[in-house]
Length: 254
Ligand code: NAD
Image 1 (cartoon, rainbow, N blue to C red):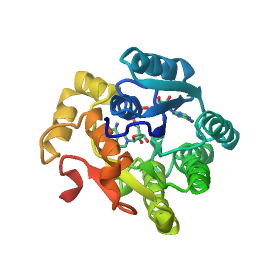
Image 2: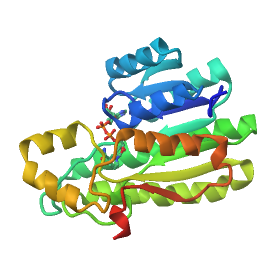
Image 3: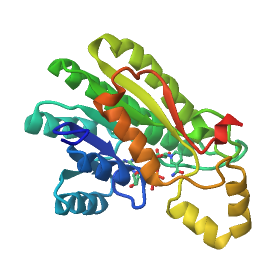
């Protein structure tokens, strides 16, 4: 029996590799979940779902722009018609649109908020509706960031969305506590991805400075986040709701 045996899960932003979404989808499937891997990049999502199936897991790829409410409705229609239930939603898709306040454009702000924050509202609302209908609870996992806990110059809009995700999650956790629907935010620190690999290759000194700023003196691995998401999606976290789970090698403890 896997830790998520027969649970139905959605992971958004599941296409990119290495990525926190694809790692989460793969980890969930290893533990017996039926996973909907969604992304705006359908080919990437299909490739992740195909790998999961080849390894004996159950996964379906769905094209899904998280900033589009109608896409969320289509996704939930599919989940409802195929399974009639949802046990876990991981709101993972996100982008970083950097910029200092003096130059930041209105449309950059709007896009940042649409993809990182409005998406979490759309997904959470629809998940709560279906989980309440079924009446067996569920887990909503909202991927925030260290930037949702502390300020980041040059990333104020990103930080605003991730801070918003944190308090939105707590508020919905309180609204849904008696339904058995748990809502938590996960706060990754610096994780090894394509972006960190480029910075390590092209700017090794700056990369080393970043590593030195982390108390554990190493970047995290996408699987570190996937394993936290696994805990939150499983019944092992049955008494955990309305909190923030920080996975950052001690960075924000300083
Ligand atoms: P990534 O860029 O590797 O992957 C993000 C995925 O989201 C991509 O597959 C992309 O196609 C998809 N996506 C982008 N816009 C979308 C949209 N409108 N609709 C649907 N999908 C869309 O990112 P990652 O590093 O895996 O990060 C995943 C999440 O973790 C993000 O929310 C990010 O803010 C957060 N995070 C990451 C780190 C890190 O170090 N990697 C640190 C803190 C927080």
